[in-house]
Image 1 (cartoon, one colour):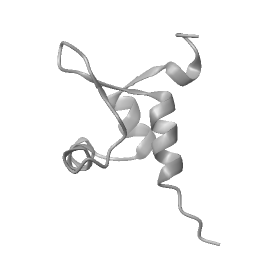
Image 2 (image 1 turned 180 degrees about the vertical axis):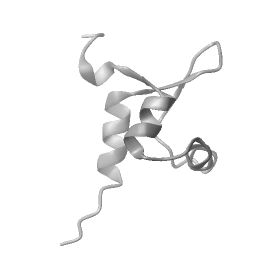
Image 3 (image 1 turned 180 degrees about the horizontal axis):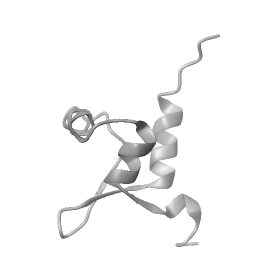
Length: 65
């Protein structure tokens, strides 16, 4: 279960590419507490669980119908 796709840890570069967002914009969201949940590794790098990103995206989805 630990290796399931939903538990995959994405790098910040991968997250930014998927969102089409700059690093600065992501950090602004994070400072306001509005970014997806992140995991800070001991070396200072950030990771985002695939499941957390998917949940965050679903929570921010808008219908334009």
